[in-house]
Image 1: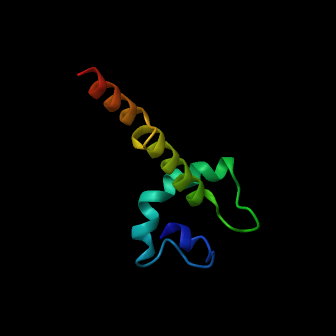
Image 2: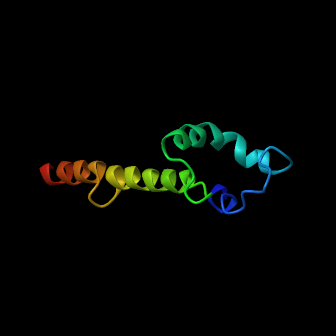
Length: 78
């Protein structure tokens, strides 16, 4: 939802229902905006975080992830 809201910069995230979406995510996104400023007026930080979370998930539990490889090794030893 936060990614879609970045397409509408005029939405006031501190008013109404939007604060429920903004409050938990804003501290992380504000930190990331210091490193990666908006590109062409569009805040890309939510997309960056979704990409990073997907990458870490894949590295840990994906088919070639660390936990999957440990599980395969333990099964081949028994």
